Image 1 (cartoon, rainbow, N blue to C red):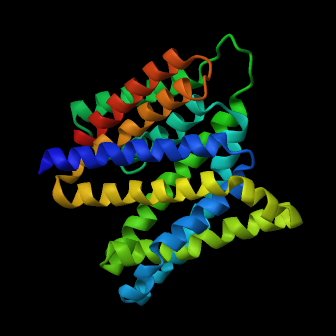
Image 2: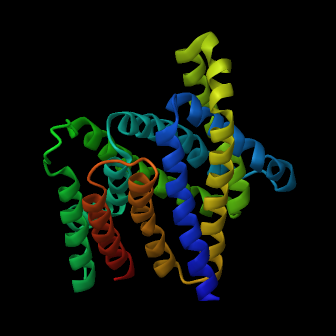
Amino acid sequence: MEWLGAAAMLASAFFHSFVGLLTKQAEDKLVFRSVLMLTAAVLVSPALVLFPLPPAEAWTFLIAGVAIHFCYQMVMIAAFERGDMNLVYPVMRGAAPALAGLAAVIVLGEQLNLVEITGLGIATLAIIGFAWPDSSRIPKAKALAFALIAAGMTALYSVNDASGVRATGNAISYLAWFFALTCWPITIAALVRRGRQWPLIARRELRRGCVAGLVGAASYGFALFALAIAPVAPMAAMRETSVVFGAVLAALVLKEPFGSRRILLAILLAAGLVMLQAG
C-alpha cells in the first residue's frame, strides 16, 4: 500500500501548489481567500453533525488555530502581492521545516545525523539562493520577509493543529470545526476592508475561490489518507515536493521570470527537506 500512499501524497502536494497558483492569480486575494475558506467550511459542514463535538481540551487549540491561521493568511497574501510565486511559494513552504530543524539544533540542542545535517544545509543554501540578488533589480526583500514570516506561522499552526487533532482523537471532527471557525476572521476582514464592494468582488472571485476550496480540501484529505496507510516519515518528506510543483506552475502558467533558476533551487530545496525528514 506504500505506492498508493505515495501517489496520494504527491497529489496532495500538487493540489496545495495549485491553490497557491489560484491565490496568485486572484485579482483581490483577500476576498478570494474569504471565498475559499467559506467554500471549504461548507464542504466539511456535514461532519459537524455526523461526528461528536471535540472535547474541552481541544478547544484551546481550535481557538489558537483561528488566530494563528488568520495571521498566516494575511502574511501570505502580503507575500503574494509583493513577489513572484516562484519566489515566495517555495520559501513559504520550504523554510518552515528548515527553520524547525535549525531551531531544534540551536535552541533545543538536538543532535542530527549526517543525512539530516546535509539536508538542512542544502535546504538552507537553497533558501539563500532564492534571496540572492538577481539582474531584475526588482525589490524582493519585503516579499521574502513576508514569506519567511508565513513559513514561521506555518510551523506554528502545524504544531498547534497536530496537538489539537491528538486532543480531539478524530481528525475529521477537528478539521470540520477548524474550517467552521477559521473562515470567519478572514471573511470579516474582507468585509471591513472592501465594504459594499465585497459582494461584487466575491462574485468575480467565486468560481476560482470555490475551485480552490474544493482542491484545498482534497489536498488535506489525500494527505490524511496517505498518512493513514503508509509510514509517516517518507510521506511527510514527499509532501515537500509541493515547492517544486509551485515553481513549475509559476514558470509554465504565470510565465514568471527566472523560471529555470528557481525551479532548480526548488528541486534542491525539496531534496534537502526530504533528507531532513527521512534522516
